[in-house]
Image (cartoon, rainbow, N blue to C red; front, side, top):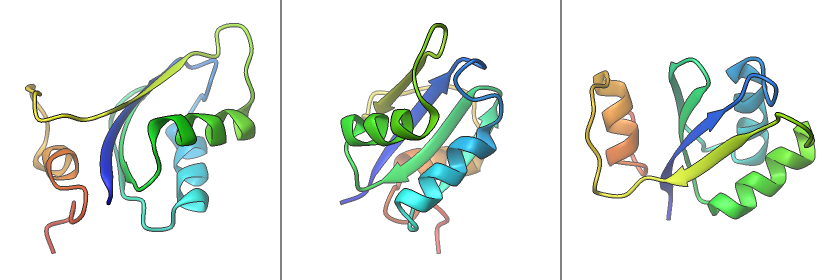
Amino acid sequence: MRKSYVMVYASAFADTHKKLTDILDELDPRCDWHAPMAHCLFFTSSFSAHELAQHIEGKLGTGAGRLFLITEVSGNKQGRLADRGWRLLNNPDNPRGS
């Protein structure tokens, strides 16, 4: 079962979302992602947040200021996003609506 996640990260951890999306694409080719704002990434995965964090840390390393958070999205959410962001968060098995 695929789940939706939100990741926020410090620029010291990854200076561009491309570094993270390349890792996610390699780890899970069915991953779908959306970068709606700086230092924030929405994505789908069949892995747990713990597994994702371990894999990403293994690729990018750890250290002072290299902070990030990965959280699974629940039904309790609200905000202002483009349709693409809401589709990804609300329907991880079919985020593009096809």
